[in-house]
Image (cartoon, rainbow, N blue to C red; front, side, top):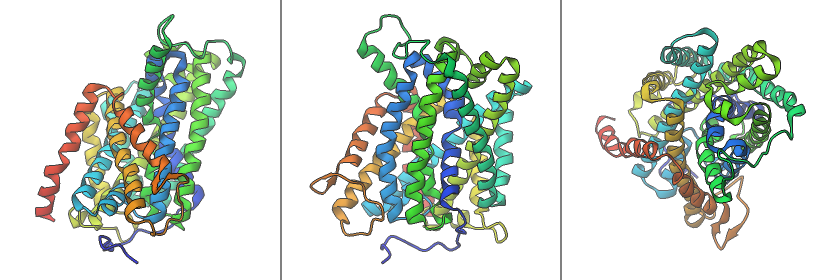
Length: 439
């Protein structure tokens, strides 16, 4: 039975993605700027303890990942977060604000990863950062328009190259394992509370590295047997990326001092160059281009589907939901996504953009976890293909921990980034009422 808030889309996307392609899709988003660019920034905060930051971020991500699994098995639709919150609170306004936050996260994530791509491209060819970032967004938007299957195939190739590069880094580091103190921080003789404080701040930054598992839910309408496949894809992609992140971070600090990692815009290339010489640095700069390009492409796909989903549900102008008759892609939302992402390239450097994105993502995760709790109480009999285990009475424990963890991690965000993110989120209120008048 359809929920009373559900309205059928005026046009339909094509279900073509398998479970494997959905997993690769998720890995393509996750394994991008986070490890290839942000590991240096994170090492500058946590020192040799940076690998603990990756574990902490993964643990926090897992709470919300399980919430996405349950909700995606209930509502296999594009515009995932928008749909979940709208149904949980039976509110068009809440749903729109959730979609607004999701759009903000996705749009600024594209710009952040494009900046990461440009950093590696600049290291190779000496190009201008902003123009390079804009260029890669434009090119990959065209790929997005050509079709989700085409995007998935290109992403699969890019992602496999990125994974191979990370595995090679791990193998190169084997002779160096045990050469450093893996629990030391950025200052000598730092107290345990001080070290843990640095680890949590770095975890807040590199949580950006885990952003992407939730976007798998936004391709539900293009995934075969989505109610079963999407939850599996979310968990598999998160587990694989966590293992790689922890091993690569240990490898990086084993080969290169954290102080040097913190100073370079191309940390993985520096690690490879230290072992293999200049040619190794060049090779890994190219691998990093594949990784970051893959992430840019898949986020562009995800955000265009989010726009499409909101428009098809009458929360955005209907023209945005138009699907091209030949490519079966939402071409208007793709164009809108491309233009906004290009403009956001001017919003700041990678570290600032990553902190802003992380602030918004935790605001979004707070609401997603809360949606699971609310629907367990208000809709206990609704079908859930995937159900999170463990509860106190009717309240599920893991989403509750996810709510608390989201609040805690927001408190660890850089103040300036939190202010910028809060303003962007609050702009959703006037946007809701303006868009109501022009639909």
